[in-house]
Every structure is written in structure tokens, then in C-alpha cells.
Length: 350
Image (cartoon, rainbow, N blue to C red):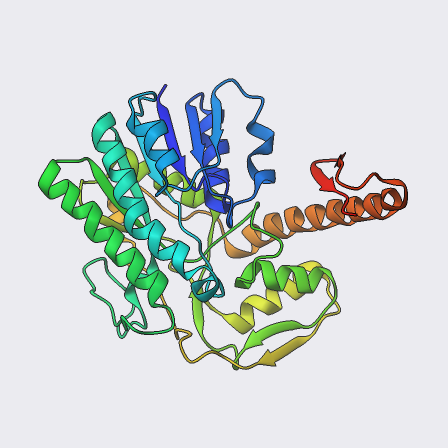
């Protein structure tokens, strides 16, 4: 079994990857700043003997001292750490740029020192507003270095360049995966990306907000298939190469919203809202490189949505119970004292 480091392991993809690798018997070390990752995502693993968690920024001195000092030998590195989501591009712009530059450099040096294989998770955002469909990995994109999405788009592009340079100049065994839209359990309930937003609205019987007329096209891949793809690229991918990873089955945003309404039996109706100028019209991956490795997306959208919505509903109900407990406890609580309610920790403020 291997010792595996996952940066950003408390996030949506990272926590699902962590669970999968632990179930296989690997030793897993998660590093996460928790700026967008959730402690609750990794809490189930904390008592496991083959799991460690460190609350560090990957560009920090603490991270460098802990891992660059030879205290931990690593066999594999999955580098996922970076805030995601279009609303975070301005809100967490500094954090995105630092994670993609100084952070990625730090992680690459760690992998080099440990002799570890590395997989960097990039994004379809590097293609910008594409002028061709589907997008092959060789497509250089239609991007704006000064545009509204540049913090994330250009951050990921720079990280890819760093990874490629370490492969070329230092013979590091490193690969790149470019995610297209991913969904599934453990997505944050307060995430404003498409699935969490629509799921929360539908399950609360509120209007489902669709930007523009909803004709823009997307592809959606269920998390289990993404995890299989990551493992496959880590084991069989070529050093210095990028691989598109996602679904190539397109659906309009309006169709996606209607599926969620039907599956939740929601009384919420579609509410059309203004669409940002920078929102792309379509992105669809060419998956021939992943197919050559033996990968195929085997989860149909409706089946994945059912599983995701069931998970989302149970977490919303649990959160509601916790809030009720908190309201009942608050009048008699001691200010500043921590109270543990089900799976979360609530601090009552004076």
C-alpha cells in the first residue's frame, strides 16, 4: 500500500478521493486550509490509523517545514488545493493565485524530494470561451488574461506550465487532469455553483434560478467516475501530459434544472435571471485520451442526480435538526463554551 498526500483533501473531490483511497488500505495525509474545504468532510476519517490531517496553506512555511524536512515520505501526491467556483474568483482571488503559483511550486518540490508521482488537477476553465467543440487537450483555448475569470483560468494555466517544467527539467513523474463539471455527494450546501444552488432551491421549494435563457450547454460527470479517472491517470498517464476528464454528454442548463425539479418533486418554478457576460456558451471534452487509458463514464446523468439529491436532502435535514438543537440550547448556554451537536461543533456567543 502507498502513502498518499492529497492537498485540498477536505473539499468535494478531495474528500471523496480520500474515502476511496482509505477504503483501499492506503495511508492518506490530507492538507487543507479549510478556506473552501469542510472539516465535516474529513471528520469521519480522523480516528482511522491510516489517516492524518494538517490544517495548512500549501504555500505556507508550516507546510514546507512539515513536509520538506524529510519527516514524511510520500509515494503519490494528488494536488487539488485551490479555491473553486466563479463567485470565489473575486472573493478569494488572492488565495487562488497563490495556491496556483507559490502553492503549486511548493507541492512540486515536495514531490521531487520524496520521489513521488504527482497528479495536478486543472480545469476546463483553461480553455476560456472555446471556439471549437469538443475541446481536445491540444486546443490552446480562447482566453482573456485580464478578464473576469482570469484569477482562476490563468492560475490553472500557470500551474500546468509549472508541472510541465518540472517534468522537463527535473524528470518529475507528473501528470495533469482537466476537470469538466463534476457533481455528487459532499458538495458544500452553501456552494453557489450550479448543482448545489439548484438542489438547495428545489428541495426548499424555492424558485430555481437559471441564468439567461438557459440554452448554454454543459456536461456533468458523477464523482465516482472522476475518482476512477484520477487513479487511472496517476497509474498509467504519461508524464507531462494533460487529460480531459468529465462527461461528453451535453445538456442545457434549463434541461438540467427541469431534471432536478422532477426528481425532487419540487413546487419551485424556473426563475430566469441575468447572465454574466463572462459565462461561457459551452464546454465539451474530447475524451479520446482517457478512453485510450481504458476509462469510460458509466453513470447516466439521471442516476447520478438521484444519488446526489438524496445525499443533499439528508444533509439539509440533518442541518435543520442541528439548528433546532442550537435554538433550544442557546438560552441556557454558557457564552464562549463549545457544545457538540450531532456531527458539528457549535460555539454559543455572548
